[in-house]
Length: 165
Length: 438
Image (cartoon, rainbow over all chains, first blue to last red; front, side, top):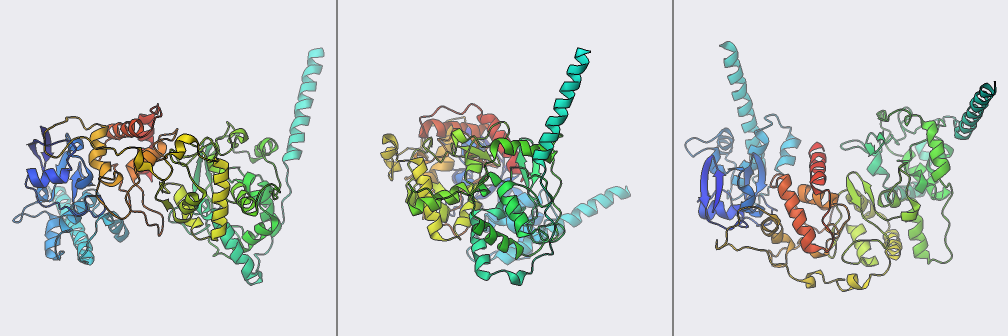
């Protein structure tokens, strides 16, 4: 029996420690955001966060994730209350088939969580491990830029509100 | 009185010695010239120079990350401190624009700057001294027709007295043998060409030979394995630890394409070398491969049986199953291997066009130094330009240091019969730090 911290909640799963984290998230915890694209760490459709770092869930044996914080798409926000990055993807309509998108969002989340002013090159270099077959790239980039701007202005608003107190 | 005379004698001897040394160390300044007219160089000579600079990998040291070609600025870490590669574009003020051909040849052959000061041997003139005059002139023509870039070279970070370049004259006295490498009548034309390139321009020994306390190559252990940029440069002689023997053809494919299915992908500092060797004349790469294969020698009995059939050593079954019958609490090396590595590195893993090599044939697992395995696990490998190999993802974010150590221990004991490295924890920490810093 393994105990996992998934999206802030403790989850018990009865699986072999060698099982890919991706399979556990989908089959045992019904968190179907992350997708199986290749099973080889080559496409990024399975991307989740492990302690705020983007990793390929398909080549992460679930055993190594015990004691770490696992965050999936479902942990960022809901359909009614999406987080700024999810909101930006909706506003930019950044999806065609949608298969790569959960992975794209998680990869972008890892960047924006520590850098809300990435240069274009930084965004593109950071998103490199994730592939999109339908060609939604330009909208994805626009969504990341949009989210960064939204997060920056939210941070400015918070600090100026605090300054006025 | 006698003590006084003895002391004066000693002082006199020291002064004479110092004067003698200074005389030995002194080199004249070669007068600056007007930057040569680019149109005055023969295009064929420039083209030959272009190939020769790729064989010599000049761009690798003399270009910094994100910097302009040949404009210098890259810091080279040595045990003594950091020495910065210089600007070798023809800029008149910050580059070599005012260097005559004579000054350039002297720098390559004897390690002396135009102004007469000595160059640190991190610039491998102990190899470049073997290059022919004709080739040096071609390299000069190529460099003097590059785009001039105004870029000052940062000051070296060396403690006193190592910052005194005069002392290098002493090093040269002990370790530099000036002179071109001529053909050996015993060797074939191809092997002579390979020797000329390997010993001279390609300066393989500069990385692949262990060095003594004064950072000179240890000739008695020539090509016996060395170190560069935090990576181990494996032995290219009979003391090789590679589990699968290298044929000249495999070496050629590896150097030319940066990848060969029997041995894997060129990684780390070998990637830019493979990129350059992919662009030069094929015959030269064959010559280098032939010469190195000759140095490594024929495979021993145990290496022969693995030649071309690494998987025959025994298919390695990953432990554990999906059905949940067994639950193993700790993520030890076997679990990590089964979940993270086996999908690409085992024959029973997924089929795709350019799978990772079976680790039983990996030379990295059998190396006497754990650095390269740590690098590859943490950083992955982005294949060299236009190579048919797939990308290996890095596991720095997936695995903790303890997990990387567990995995490396498992790989070493499963895929080699060599003892575990004594310093794995330190190696993993050091490599992760250097990867984060870059």
